[in-house]
Length: 547
Image 1 (cartoon, rainbow, N blue to C red):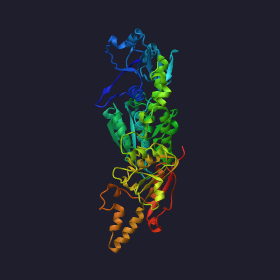
Image 2 (image 1 turned 45 degrees about the vertical axis):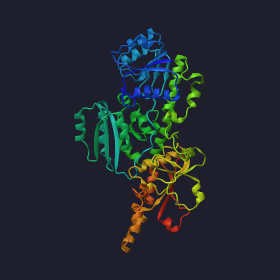
Image 3 (image 1 turned 90 degrees about the vertical axis):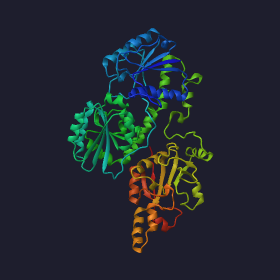
């Protein structure tokens, strides 16, 4: 089968081909990536369209279908050539057209129509009785760990993006935020084509508790800076200009692990149950900051929804189904769609957290499958803290490149080698303090991702408050070396894992675990350790909520 696929913009980089148009990326380039993963048997010619495009007659030969992505100018002359050569035309994303004249012409020359799922706020155009399909956008990139601010933060970091048309809503939001006296606010503004005088005017009017950073919009910058903020702020009604920048902003933010605080105009969005909506940004932020456990749970549920409807696998399946219905030809040979795509391994679609098949030593490769088994327990940190050898054998020991004797070597911040909802228990012994305070929240959320609903995260570490008391006692006696080693690590050990970056008390560790979405967090007695040693240490247990 030969398919001609027309788009308005392509950008060639050293690594791949991309586009500044979200519709081109999510409704063409991601689709082609999915086709490649499952072995679609078709000759697909990607054609960049411009008003002066002249096409060789040979291009039309033996073509079974022409797919036309969102156009920003009249495509009628090329469509006439396609019709002359008896090539059926599927006009994709016709609901995304801003220009009503161009949209009506597209509906006129198309044989088939397909609609997006992120223009929910716009009534679907009249199809004139032509066959039509709804095809969801494919969300770009792997799902990211859930991230919410800590309960003790004093500065809330927001992200706002948009164009000049949305700018007035930002000025209104800033006026509302000046009443949020209990926090300082930092707003990262990613703006497209906003005049400098508007930025200057906003800066002059800033209340004392608000600071802004304004940068030019780019999709790469957006994805990079999401890691540095707490919430995404949508202070304006759904906008097609913003949609063309990034697709559905709610889907995009939730997929990146961030909560969205939106104005009431976003009520009615398919994911409205997983975000915050408000008519006052300040009140909305107060509500989110007092319900951080619920915020993390909502993001998790939103990501599950996106995985079901907007993943590379789901989108690939839908596109194959539509193309085969239109052409009455198979893209996958005799086995058909379900057998080929459903039978493909999850890692073929870049599924988040999927266990890969990379080469390595046999111990690592065999251990990495363990999280898929029933009753598995993972342990990281000190191997010899417990004296009971039988209890140690219950665990799969995971470590990084600096760990000795690990069954599985992986990134301890993300546990990326382990699938979601697969472990009954994760035991962390003396390694929670190996992470910086600004990153530990994301680390715990990554660990919780691996737990089954109802699974336990057990964290053991030194009690920093006890260590401080011991330090004061030792200083009176004229010696502090032992306690300093507890706080800062033994300088005789050159292993980075032996030197803490932060300290925890019973209260601060409990607050951290609650803020990361765990429930029923409580202090437990340490097993297999003397009462004296146990008094200097913390064992905190939290449960992953049932979804």
